[in-house]
Amino acid sequence: MYTGNALVPGIKAVPRDPGCVRRMLIGYDDFMGPLLEIRDLRVRFGATEAVRGASLKIEEGEVLGLVGESGSGKSATALAILGLLASTARIEGQILWSGENQAVDLVRLPPGALRQIRGRAIAMIFQEPMTALNPVMSIGRQVAECAAAHATRLPAKEARRRAIAALEAVAIPDAARRYGDYPHQFSGGQRQRILIAMALINRPRLLIADEPTTALDVTVQAQILKLLADLQREHGLAMLFISHDLAVVGQVAGRVAVMRAGQIVETGATHDVLAHPQHTYTRSLLAAVPTMKTDREKPLAVL
Image (cartoon, rainbow, N blue to C red; front, side):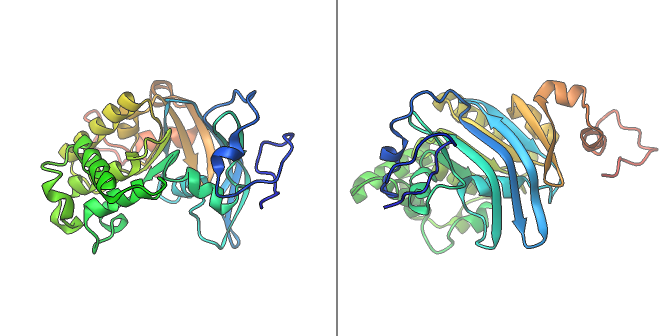
């Protein structure tokens, strides 16, 4: 039995079964905070501090863009939410998740209870679909496995039916026939759609999309962004959309947080941040992106 306190400070802990997160979340119905709130998050790998006191909030149904250059701490923040950082990482701060009637601190949640949330209530689309997918397992089995992992004694036929429905929902052509095909038999855009199907098959409340359009050409990128927007509206998903591309974030996010060297340096409504950036780093990010109005005689901004 787990007797630690994963709840918001001030809420008395009681003995719990780490395998039953539903039972853990019942009993405190006064929490009116955001769906997810990160407070003063710090992630260290040895002497290197990858995330330095980051704080942000995501409301129910909101799309929050998290932008910054490579190495700014965006992915480390996302992996910390799901407890997927390497065992060598040291995590401090709070990641408060608004569960069923109660807030829990994901940083302090025991592994068994966190597994009940990860992939079901909170799902993630990882970078690089060719490496995120298992090359020796059919895509149908991989999607079905996501459903079976969070259902008690789910029959194989039902898992297959759900997997095919999820693949059809992300517009994989002839999904039933292609159920037994392998990742290398699909295009880059189709592989990204398969990862989206895996993430959404359990109808999560929060979707973390980590650079979901990386390495895709502009046409396919637009298709994936439209698919995510349609699914977000259809299911009322909250989304943390991670990207280094401010133009992409401007298309999908209602609010944006700018990250530099492990810190959140600016947040606000996407239109306001892009049109009237307040932080010098945000202005540099925007100035580093060429547009039709860019003076070709002058060098782009250097971050």
